[in-house]
Image 1: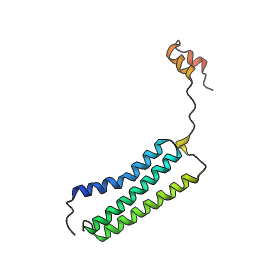
Image 2: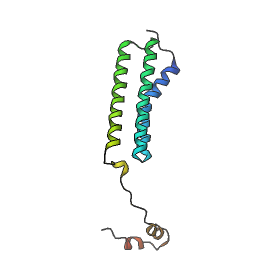
Image 3: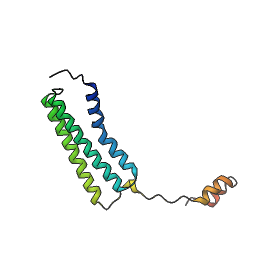
Image 4: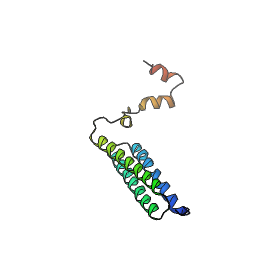
Length: 128
């Protein structure tokens, strides 16, 4: 096995390996189930990219067979888990905490907090 001095290739694998996590986080923050599911499938695609890079790294003898097999096992498991999660998100009826209902802003309270005398808001909006 050669000493792995192809720093660009090594860097690309590292970026691709972290990309699924970032895609999932970004999709979760988008706010809709459909966008989240889309992001999950993009994350799954990134697992495939890492898998292809592992094949190339093995072919170039940058990694040994045990590292190659371990990497394949991890990418396959990651891909399977993401696929399963995406299927559950597509078919589930619960929206999860991402979709919790936020009450509309109380414009009157906002106005009073900016323009009314101190203490008036507390008197009008008694915690109950």
